[in-house]
Length: 143
Image 1 (cartoon, rainbow, N blue to C red):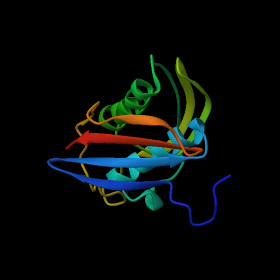
Image 2: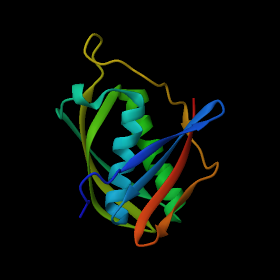
Image 3: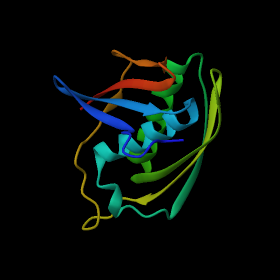
Image 4: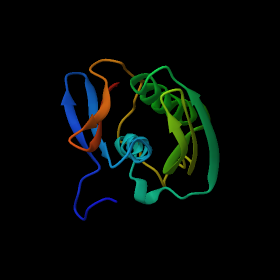
């Protein structure tokens, strides 16, 4: 259970890119927090409603690859369908794959403002794992 005032992510300054360090009590929460933190970079989540739902299924050979593929799939929905997600429910996760339900809505001019245009999720300095009983991931994005 998340402790009160315990941060779930922080933004990293990175030359010509931007990064996140994301935290979670378990791998499920870590991936949910990563999705939320990713869209926090893109827009003000307080203005996003949960009107549209997508199920996401991803296969991965490792947790590092799974994290990059997870965020890349979310970026795909953002780029192709103009979707902004704010709710993330990882139903199942393991080193071989992930199933999640995400909720949000289409970008609406005048309602949503794009703060950051993310071009790609990278493998540069990717780290996903458990340390001192807490899950942590570091991800760098191309802008």
